[in-house]
Image 1 (cartoon, one colour):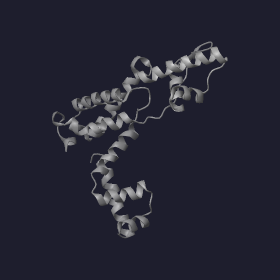
Image 2 (cartoon, helix red, strand yellow):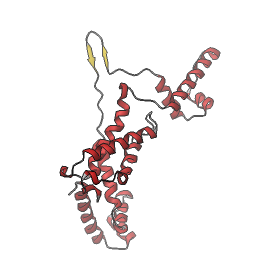
Image 3 (cartoon, helix red, strand yellow):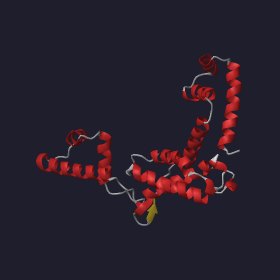
Image 4 (cartoon, one colour):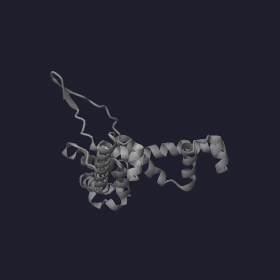
Length: 222
């Protein structure tokens, strides 16, 4: 297992799937996937460089926050979100269409008309329109400067847990993987799971309990 080898022995190519999983979390947010992937690869290399087996965690668990950090750096560059070229071009096209409607008809086109003119979906049109809007400042003033705090949920821990869970499940044998799939992805009861697998409900219960314990220990790196 590369997770327990010294950092200079870790083969990053074996963990490239982590980069794809992290990059996919940020698709369709204004940055091309290739850029997200490149930043994620840089994060993976940084994780290898700084990882130490004495951290008492698996390399994959350590690497995910580093990969996410590099990807998020793209969105922080210059203090604004970088927008893909295709979205910028669509935004310019929409601006010209809106100007044409205003000059000819004295009104702006609605979303359906913009979809017809550009051949794009309504979601894509709305995204492009947002691109053309000035960025909202998080500070404003009346008599004195104030600061608007927008609460956001930290997703890093959830993403790390999800990736770790997928890794653990991928290592299960077919029968145990089927049990987990039926119980937690299909939502079947233990009785129905037993019927599908051809075993008893008691066997399902015992095996499930042991599986969950083993999976939890693996995710904790124990």
